[in-house]
Image (cartoon, rainbow, N blue to C red; front, side, top):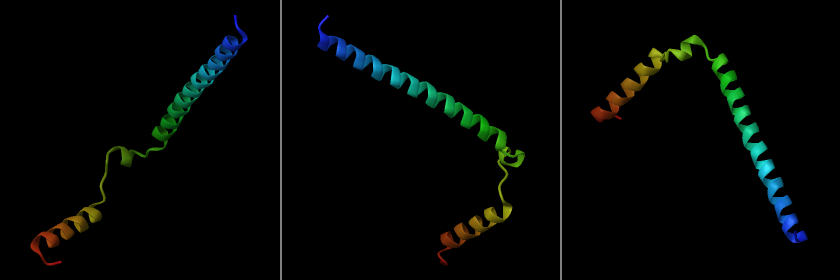
Length: 70
């Protein structure tokens, strides 16, 4: 083979190997982070509990805005 062709093939092989390793490592790290986040979620957050005081404040603000008394 021509030396230029060999150089191109080696370069392309190196880039392909690097990108493959990058994708694999990124996927593994993403799975690890998702697993760690899932472990740290408290039971109250899983149920989607909503602060009733916050809901009351938002409801009052919306009511006042709709009545035109803002």
